[in-house]
Image (cartoon, rainbow, N blue to C red; front, side, top):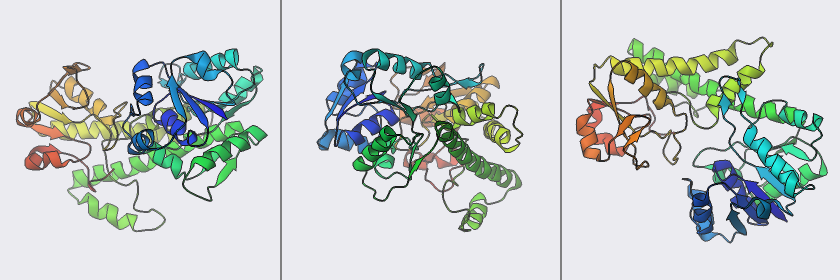
Amino acid sequence: MKITVVGTGYVGLSNAALLAQHNSVVALDISKEKVDLINKGISPIEDAEIQDFLQNKKLNLEATTDERLALKDSQYIIVCTPTDYDVEKKFFDTSSVESVINSARKYNESATIVIKSTIPVGFVQNLESKGHQKIIFSPEFLREGKALYDNLHPSRIIVGSDSKEAQIFAQLLKQGAIKKNIEVLYTGPTEAEAIKLFANTYLAMRVSFFNELDNYAELKGLDSRQIIDGISLDPRIGQHYNNPSFGYGGYCLPKDTKQLLANYKGVPNAIIKSIVRSNEIRKEHIANQILACNPAVVGIYRLTMKSGSDNFRASSIQDVMRILKSKGIEVIIYEPSLSEETFEGYELSKEFNSFKEQADIIVTNRMSEQLVDVQEKVYTRDIFRRD
């Protein structure tokens, strides 16, 4: 069957690669550069499995910028466009999703539209009230840099409908996966939307918990790792998602927690609002610890969130940098993935050895072997040397 995937970020390209093993898939994107790379078998994003699939797997996959070509005659149109959180409206900006739906119906009235983009609770129900039909929300639970791996080995498949089209779509995802006996849950559309936001907010809560534990240990002169090891051996807590960081960031957690908090308007809560605030407090604490060292020049080693990912969108280090700059501290950045001279007004250092020499303190969210020779001037809260 012909399937169209709109958007070729982590979600879109991983779904396209997964489904192109057994179906004819067209990936639609507004970026000609990304489209050309995909058609040459080169991944425009950093993901080892996606790159392997594009180079070595027999995929029926074509990328294009042509809307009509992509959308016409498809049985399924999967929407994977970004939905940023609008801080003024306190709501996701769903304009890209709505635009795709309008284009889809212009060229293809019969296709089932599956939304993979994160949307507010009640979005599909609102569309249905306006007369839209055959629209399904199916949340994704993918890690940056491991998106296709997580699609090949999914923790679960959730589809916000129990229609025939929804069941077929779930089977398509299962067909492309390596993992067997995958749990599939069919829910109402609004429940599926809530599952996505609550799942990511729980993960943000866990990140915040271990970061606040680390705040305490750092200021009290305690060994943070010993405390975390001790509590993580409890199987109810577990030894995962427990490595302190500068705060949660990236594509999902910051905007999803804020959206869920906005959806809580009129509903009693304490934890949800505290998760959002805790992340801000953590970044303020990190900045204060750096300022306490009285540096003239602070070097930021990598804007990316973690190894194996090329994403630094909403990375927590950027908020730390803004605080330092507001205090009159010179901030320089070493980020080899950027070719420009500056990044948002900060100097980009091109030569690594010069960067190490110029910085009085080097700040990194995750420790790297590149920094071992100057570890005496490195500030990090990376305890386990892993993501």
